[in-house]
Image (tube, rainbow, N blue to C red; front, side, top):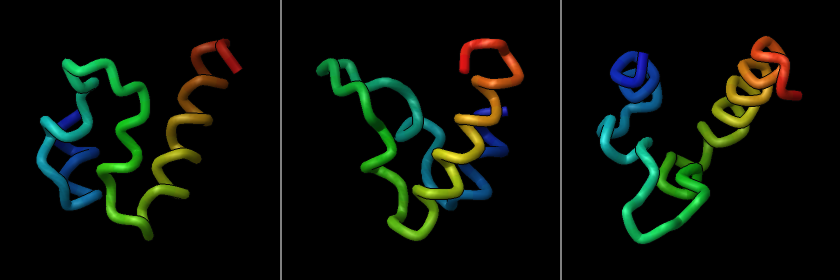
Length: 52
């Protein structure tokens, strides 16, 4: 799923993984026009998983 998500966002899959330096928000690595969409997808996934 990571590869499909990265493909839609037109970014390298590795850029969506947590950074080893401890940065918690990788959304800054996404193109600005895709951030809102990515946040929405993540929020929906959290709700479906029962964490939201």
